[in-house]
Image (cartoon, rainbow, N blue to C red; front, side, top):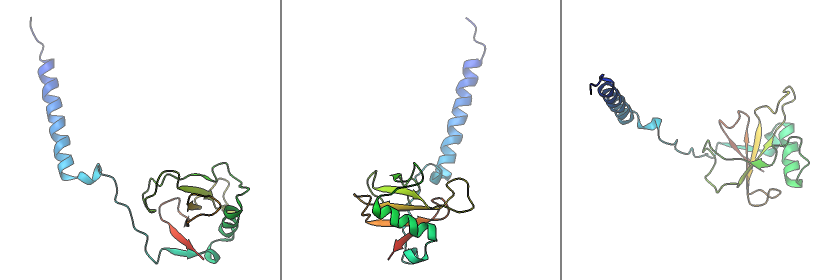
Length: 138
């Protein structure tokens, strides 16, 4: 039985691919590793009175349990960005801070964490759709 060389080419091609992959991984391990959590500092705070009026209104709605305008308000926030402090799943909930000129939900959100949604332990404000957060203080 005569071979056409395809098997040898396939083995060589896979070997080269795996060698390149291994060398890439060795040079740039951060590509495949999870991002380190960012720690919020003292300067990363905002007073409730400094929130936009829509944010102040949303804080009042959060404490009274609604009613909320969007179905996603009160939904679990997964903290996939790992910027907020690490907590168990379903600890954080997200709420939309309406932007008057936006037709969609926009980029502004309040994320609150705690066991009881109407009595959050901590809330955070983002105006850039989860790229950065500021802890809301009294």
